[in-house]
Length: 94
Image (tube, rainbow, N blue to C red):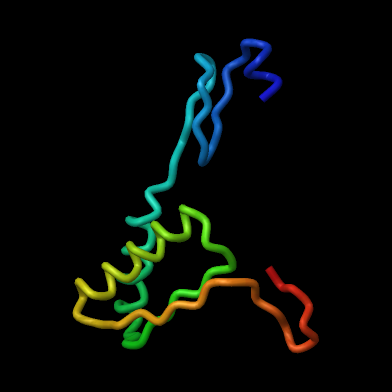
């Protein structure tokens, strides 16, 4: 944000900042989750799980949108798994 401090225009993605020369762009996480549910149903899937590697606010919003989308389409429940994922050698994958 040094450029913003220098008075140059900047765009911050995913966060807000109180600076007159900085614009912000956000993702509608709930809508994104709903779109994913619609896509999976369109593919013919009938059973769903939401797997996330952390419980950050954007993940919670996406999970809610996904679960709501699945339910609105007449399917469910959505099984959930949130936490660190590991491979067979117990190395952290993400």
